[in-house]
Length: 392
Ligand SMILES: Cc1cc2nc3c(=O)[nH]c(=O)nc-3n(C[C@H](O)[C@H](O)[C@H](O)COP(=O)(O)OP(=O)(O)OC[C@H]3O[C@@H](n4cnc5c(N)ncnc54)[C@H](O)[C@@H]3O)c2cc1C
Image (cartoon, rainbow, N blue to C red; front, side, top):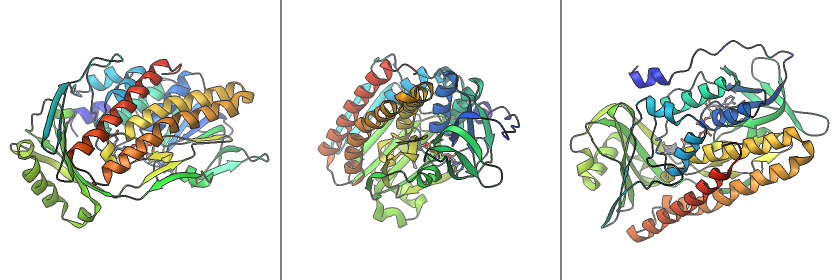
């Protein structure tokens, strides 16, 4: 285990007996979406329990590039300094290639963010979870959730677990990822679905020495570099789903050698290869009586967007605000929950349009450039929203 991973680790969670206990909120899923939502709710004074079928968050298949909104959300949550102290390098320069066009620019100082960060999930997730615990939330690992329980009025009033008694709660949050058990159990309406179209492979490399993010949209492929902890850089290749059957190692190395030889020239791979073939784009209704969905459970998008963590952090704020209002004044619940639904979709729907288009690989350089510019405009509006949030 390297130094960064060790520093990102949680303190051992205290054993918790919830029999007879009562929680305001139970959060299913302890990674970025669940931990961030729990953090905001615990800080707002609510009694929060986080459960996860896994142990404390470990590595997962996800690159972790954050732009301005994600970085701003981490700063507002009060965890950015800890992430920086864990050795996460600042990203101060963006290099983009769209076909023949090359653009480089410094990260502008706006919304109090003058650098972006790409913390490994072994750093980001444990730090967020520890912050939630420090704010008063309880965390119990290795609790596999079967579904939700209902009261006689048809409201969700807790969760049922595989090996143990049901856990009652006034509110249940499904932060349990794209295959969300909570979403299935509450029958969350499907608002939008786009089938997968992208085959992605990546690995960590030493010796790459890039000063910033490098994202290239060339020859109907998406290749690039994301500097991260421990002097390592993610090098990735995305392409049409038909390429998913190709041998991952040779796909990564030959595509990089062909489209970005400068990135891989001095690179030496450290660790295993990661693959994500065919992530579907799924938008679910995130709100109902006594329940919410946050993160991938409510909105999963193709990884070409490098947006899922940012969306989870943004929606953690919106969702926590809605629950806080609903718990403080039940008469306010319909309006508070409608606000969460509408505000999330004000961002999610236009994001999804651009992301599905980008992940189709049905573009030449100028179209990819336009789609990225439009994604950037949506991010500006997100930063405005976060800056005005009460809980953030
Ligand atoms: C290849 C790839 C690259 C990506 N790159 C980026 C990127 O560069 N930037 C970016 O912002 N996003 C990126 N994303 C998206 C990002 O990884 C996701 O959006 C993010 O992980 C969502 O976090 P989450 O907390 O919602 O869900 P998850 O990270 O999926 O966490 C869900 C948690 O719920 C737990 N759980 C599930 N079911 C149960 C159950 N029944 N009972 C109890 N616990 C349960 C799981 O154990 C897990 O800990 C990428 C994704 C992929 C696949």
